[in-house]
Every structure is written in structure tokens, then in C-alpha cells.
Amino acid sequence: MNSRLLALLSAGGATLIYGLNHTIAKEVMPDHVGAFGFIFIRTAGASILFWFASLFVPFEKIDKKDYLKFFITALLGMCLNMLSFFKGLELSTPVNSGIFATTNPIIILCLSYFFLQEKIGLKKFIGITLGFIGALILVLHGTENSLRAPNVPLGNFLFLLNSIFFSSFIIMVKPLTQKYSTITIMKWLFLIGFFMNLPVTSIEFSEINWINMPFDAIWRIIFVVLGTTFLTYILNLFALKKLQASTVGAFAYAQPIIAISYAIITGNDYISFGRGLACLTIIVGVYLVSQKPNYN
Image 1 (cartoon, rainbow, N blue to C red):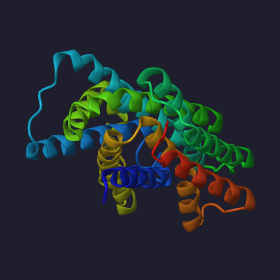
Image 2 (cartoon, rainbow, N blue to C red):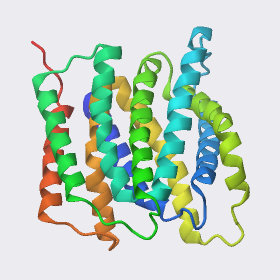
Image 3 (cartoon, rainbow, N blue to C red):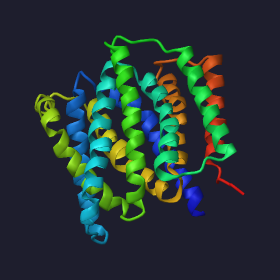
């Protein structure tokens, strides 16, 4: 298996986990864990896992000139990104969060063009345009609000901020992946992020009733820490080593498909002609964007 195909599979695997995460995490909040309490668990758990994993890889010293880069990257990816996503998920719906994730490639494409000097070929431009059209169909088609979504407009606004912060994180972390290993990068980013979030997240964490928490909530928390946090960041950073940032970001277009599909399987949503057409358009867009660029 060539490295590019492996990188595409890694990005696809991370997207699958992210798509499932929208519903899995939502079903824990706010009855068992508050949004900010979830972030405490996520950053603490990821810090422990990545620092433990670092015991089995060669030690890498961080260059002093990269200290600020690590700080800003942690602020964007492990602080602002998580705070806006989990609070948005607490206020809005999983399907809405999946739909808003499709704005990531557009933001990443613009940032990559200006800050990473990535070229945009015609095929990639068409792919991103198709993905945007598919996402727009989903947005216009709409999703039903639920009783567990008390403030959808504010939640959706936080999802938009989340997309901006996550896209900025991808741009900031891309150069670091060319210099340090994935484990080295993530162990420091999550440790920094944990202390950044601590003043906001510690109160809700202390209010969690662990003794009476059902197993159904516990396995979802474990999924978020092991899958959505530990595994997805490893997969995404591996993909970033081999692919352009805009290519990795384009996989976010598949998140609404996964989110809606999972909701249908669990009996919480339905498929219609409009959603089916949107999903097909998004799949074609992701395929075009994932193709190796040719500027000759």
C-alpha cells in the first residue's frame, strides 16, 4: 500500500470517527456530563495517553523558536476549538454540527492559499465547489430541532466558530508535522491545552456524578477520549505529513453523511431525496479533492 493511499485512508478513518462523535457525545450531554466537563476529561485523557505513548518512541526536544507556535496551535486546537464545539453540541443538534463541519475545507483552502502557498488546481476547485453545493443542499433542506437542543441559533454560531478555529489549527500544525513526530506534537499540545482549559472546565468536571453514571454513558466517554481524541489526531497528523492541508480538510464534507446515517440507523432521523442528492454530491466532491494534484 503506497503512502498516499494510506494517508487518504487515515483521513477517511478520522472522518468516520468524527461523524459518529456528533451523536455519541451529544447523548451524554448534559444529563451526565456538561460540555466543559467533557473537555476536561478529553484533554486530561489525551494528555495521559500521548505522554504514555511517548515512552515508546525516540525523545524529541522542542526548538525554542517553536515554543510560541506550540502555544498558539494548542490555543486554537485544544482550547478554542473544543470549547466552541462541545458547547455548540450541547445547545444544538448532532446533524447541525456535522453540516457545519463542511465549512472546514473552504476555510482551510483559503488559509492554505495565503499562508502555506498551496496551489489550487481545477480538479480540486471543482471538488470543493461540489462539496459546498452538497453541504448547502443539506443546510437548506434543514433538520428538525430536538428537545435536547435548547438554543440552536447560538449552538450553530458556535459550530461556525469551531470550524474557523479547527481550520486555523490545521494550518498551524501542518509545518510542525514536517519537523516533529505525531506523538511529540500531540503530547505537548494536549498538555498545554489541558492547563489552558482548566479554569473553565474544572467546575463542571467536579460536578460529575461518577458513582451513578450508567455504562451507556461511560462507553461513550471512552469513545470520545480514545477514538475522537487520541486516534483521530494520530490519523489526521499522519495524513497531514503526506497530503496537503486542504485535501485533509475536504474530508469534513463526509461528516454530514456519517452523522445522518448514524442517526437513521439509531432511529433518530430519516433520509429523503434532498439529503440523498446532497450526500452523493459530497462524495463526488471529496473524491475529486482527494486526487493527487497535477499543475503541469
